[in-house]
Image (cartoon, rainbow, N blue to C red; front, side, top):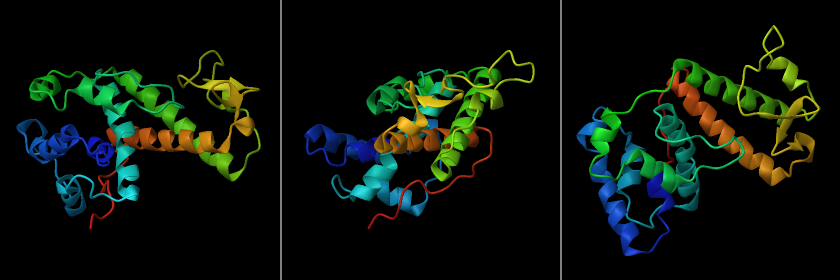
Length: 212
């Protein structure tokens, strides 16, 4: 669905051909059991170019969630929390549009439980810190909060700190431009949501708004 959103405004014959393939892909055996709601069915069956901008934007963010799944099965690495996913690269890594897609999925192996827990904890902390910052920009000692009781190891991975608080690409939160903060917030929101789903904390929900 993310890929369908990304090609919707592409007038090329290749995009049209790919859009026509997606409904058939959703019916293949390797994704047996996946249920789409009515809005999602209309979304994937909509003619190329029929989606409104809001629908394209909302669905294109699903690539961040798909990236977490690709990472969890060892098919791709997860970029830093401040960097958007390369959708084409993730799709290629998963082989969703390849003839051997079913074999790739069948042969996928989960990363270790410890790795997945670390990823989930990291994005949970990021979500908490950014939400707190948006409501109250006062600095906090985040480093202390994410250090284990012995004070020797961090309980998260891939975070940056400045004066013991979160930093983004080396820049303290209070100095990060608003557009960048909003982008990072959106990336973290979607990745955290997918990590929560992996652990059963998120129920299935419609991923797109209504298609006319």
